[in-house]
Length: 304
Image (cartoon, rainbow, N blue to C red):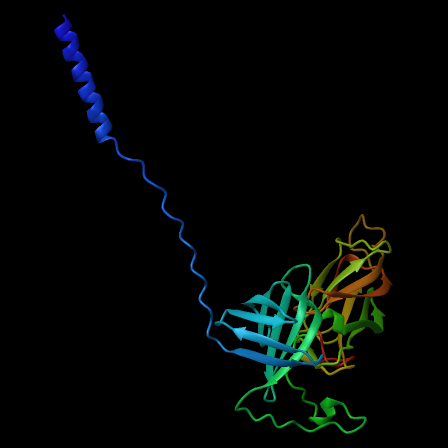
């Protein structure tokens, strides 16, 4: 009996020892790997002289990315779509460049609430382009505008922004239940800018509420000259561009006895988000207004 118990004990002990010997040692955690630093770009830094007296540095890392340094702060920028020139956004700023007359000019702006469009200009800068003839064009004589000095041709300019513009009402016309009024957008900035396309127009009532029941429709040409496509309009400082708004004063629905009263119009330039406002009281019927493209002349001649 004792012999059987001793034999069993020895067998159990042998099995336990074998299991202990065959148990795999737990793996030790690998030593953390330090992340590799991003390789520094060997793209040269480009300096721009600004109107404020500051120097702005931009490193164009590749075709899609740039690093801009302004007032000891560096912004990582990415390329985005632009109507003309090259435009970069990031870090709450917009950097928009254009080239003309042997110079590359750039505008640094603070981005608006949408995070994609510059609304407040921080710096206007420029630099000469190596190897390009930068001979200046004719200078205007006293009392002469830049357009007159160049035979009516203005160089390419960056798109106008809301803070550069003021809105004013012009003359109008009426007949057969329809109304039309002309409006002007004046460049009050110190640099030329351009407008191409249709303004965005919204209406507000006397309490500042948007009249969402009134839609603005794009109407090619003008009320008196239909079918003309938008063309670029370049504005020298103090120059004006024009557009018109047309509407009906006749209710076109059986249950529509009165038409909404508008007290203010808000206009946003093409490719911008900052609106300019103007008190303007009228009562458009039919749930729509018609807006023409921006044009250079105040009163286009009727089609013949």
